[in-house]
Image 1: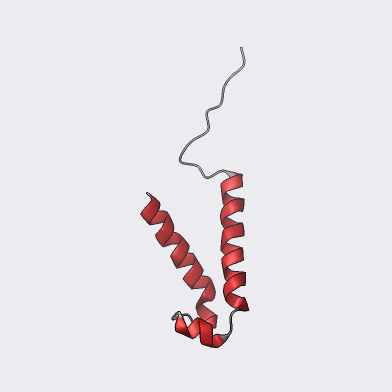
Image 2 (image 1 turned 135 degrees about the vertical axis):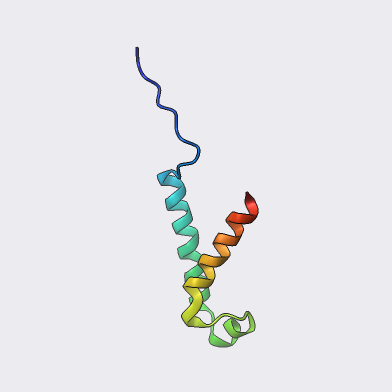
Length: 65
């Protein structure tokens, strides 16, 4: 008899991790294309883009739960 392995709903799949990385990378890239004036209007410093995107992503995940 073959064993059935159930996926753990609490584990993040490889596909989810790749998808999240693509979204993160795309957002960082888009913000880096903006000039300093546009970033300043949004309240973002160029040196903080990575932290901003990560915190925004964390907030979106918290709100979805």
